[in-house]
Length: 112
Image (cartoon, rainbow, N blue to C red; front, side, top):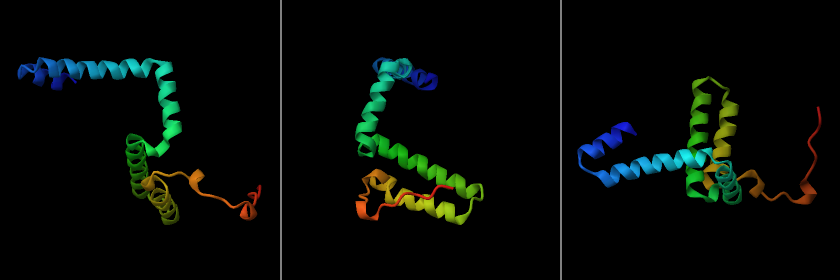
């Protein structure tokens, strides 16, 4: 922030510097507001990965997680499962709840 505003002020871009500071302060203000966070979470829950920003963030997070699994030497089966999940859901902007499960094929998982 300091470097950006200093550069803008040095170039006599006062309105740009003010916008940079305002954007930064808005982010701080919104983060601290529980009501704003609540509204953001509700909007995210309603739109899910249909929201382009959420979809991009989810894909980035899952991609980084998959890379971390590889770096940490996690087994190939786990990496393949995560990669398949990314391909099937995250990259398409979907979630497991989007998969229809016919009632006749549903079985409860075994306990234990």
